[in-house]
Amino acid sequence: MADWIAQLWGTLFNFDDYGALLLLLRNSILAGAVLGVVGGLVGYFVMHRDLAFAVHGISELSFAGASAALLFGANVVVGSLAGSLLAALLIGVLGTRARERNSVIGVVMPFGLGLGILFLALYQGRASNKFGLLTGQIVAVDSPELVVLLTVSAVVLVALAVLWRPLLFASVDEDVAAARGVPVRALSIAFLLLLGLATAVAIHILGALLVLSLLVTPAAAAMRVASSPPVVVSLSVLFALTAMVGGILLALGASIPISPYVTTISFLLYLGCRIVGARRRPRGARLHWAR
Picture 1 (cartoon, rainbow, N blue to C red):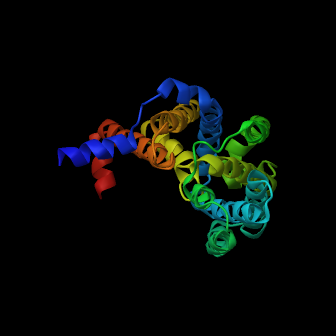
Picture 2 (picture 1 turned 90 degrees about the vertical axis):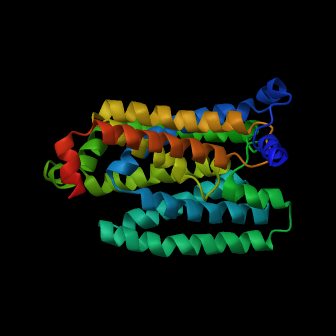
């Protein structure tokens, strides 16, 4: 038993030549930090607008785009971006109401996953490339791809800064915002496009199956312990940064993908916030909640 535990520990955590690995994978660490900021900010609106299911739907079509690019020898990041933006447009244009949106996502998601599996089945290259699209890979970020990731992330952050106030208004009370002249539908489509961009760049490191741990879990955890928008946003970014950078640092040198580390840290943060939030809730509120 002790030998098995020691072998498992050596597989999960390998700190041999850690300093050299830190230097070698500095692009991945920087990419993780940037994605943490983007994911924390975007995730705040994902939760407010009830778009967690949309993240999954967009990620599946992004996976299909990346798989197609891998099969045809094109740039995987560009393929992922194309798939994400197409999914965001479909969901935004066809899903004007929540029920319609969920129906569109339910149609798009299996179609994208099926296409992605088809393209991967036809791909005759390295198996690690196939696996990486689903579960992420820590060594995938070279200098050109880092430039693309930083550029796309900058676009998302600038657009969020410009749209922040009307987008927050529309997210909190869509009907009142529309009555005040806020272009609610245009904002909805614009945010879905930003969500598509964020999903595409996150998939390259986290993989298509586990991108929810960046774009949903940190914000969901923050909303368990805070209600003030500035505090929730700050905690969401902090939790996303902790999960991404912490997951990368733990995964350095290990023989398994990065995503289990990131998802575990995200889940533990959510679990801790849920416990803290439950203890801080007044007794009367807990009794009412129990009913």
